[in-house]
Image 1 (cartoon, rainbow, N blue to C red):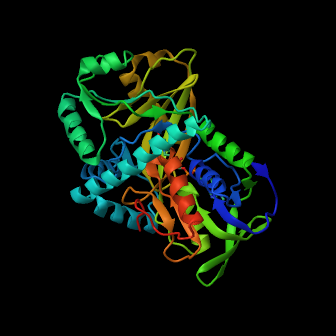
Image 2: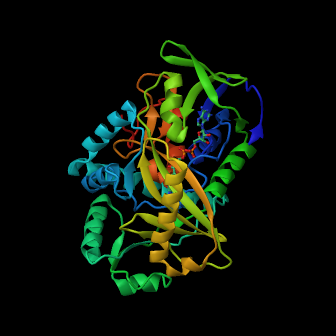
Image 3: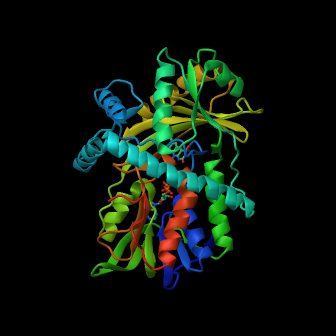
Length: 414
Ligand SMILES: Cc1cc2nc3c(=O)[nH]c(=O)nc-3n(C[C@H](O)[C@H](O)[C@H](O)COP(=O)(O)OP(=O)(O)OC[C@H]3O[C@@H](n4cnc5c(N)ncnc54)[C@H](O)[C@@H]3O)c2cc1C
């Protein structure tokens, strides 16, 4: 992105240069707007080391009765895919209460449907971007969830029922078909759910390509944090970074898991909480996997990336992960992944990474104009689906800014 100090007044200032900010900036530029991205470390947040899945089928929200039970087990100190971090701040406590209230069956169904519609549109936009010559490296590997317990077939059938209601074409497969789809799978598999249309990309590379393409089209970059804002009534007049003042007609908040803190600087209440996760990237000489996989019991994902396998998982809501907990979580992820794909045992050590997902209580991203700050547009809260939803977010947010309406859109939550 073109390095430039002290941009004059611009149409749009995008706070955050992760995959969401990069997508919004590029799409806004394509609509003829003058855009600056402000970020001290573009591409270094959650968009760097995640699983890289583009998966409309992952549309069932986090706030479900089963996840609440798992979260409670985690809070009580048992090992669980979902846990609650310490120290527990009053803000996180309030967020968790709203999260728990979202876990009603009717709400879960409507959220799943709305998420699927957004994600399915986004998946098609990835193809349109590739057709237009923007190579984000998306490979159509499909995605296979593998169950390994005796109750796997029942659990898989229940997931498929929920997915069908949402519109997804994930379908149940037996153990033989699962192993035919991915021969590297353990023979212990009892059932699977197969998503033929899903794919995987290298998320750091995809974010960098979006940033670079935006820059080539004239998006400017200010590599500094936003530290304050000047308000004029309900309007943001200017943003302050460490050394600059930026004046913009529209401000887009795309600061990922920091969106609550950055929103507060702007006078907005942005109910986003960090959902900490981890990954381990292991270099490989050949491809040990054909498909992207998920251990559906442990919620551990194994992604085939160019020249590497990446294992991802963990969901700690709030708090700050400490070093020993992170090391234990990464070791647990590797164990779970090796249980799923025994050949991973022979691979060398990998590189561990931690990132924070921007979680909303209801599971839908916040897309649209803020309720209190008139020229602030939210593009955050993408939770477990930021890579999947990036193109559609760029389309929705740039369209509402270009049309001048800044209306809240379908998919937005309060
Ligand atoms: C373990 C894990 C696995 C995941 N797997 C997948 C997956 O397979 N598929 C999928 O779709 N999604 C996945 N996700 C979710 C996805 O990573 C996120 O939803 C997505 O990266 C969020 O993008 P973002 O641009 O909003 O945030 P980020 O990438 O975190 O970017 C936010 C940016 O804001 C900047 N910023 C912060 N404060 C300021 C400030 N004051 N001023 C200026 N800039 C600031 C930061 O420097 C950062 O660059 C996963 C996440 C994790 C943690």
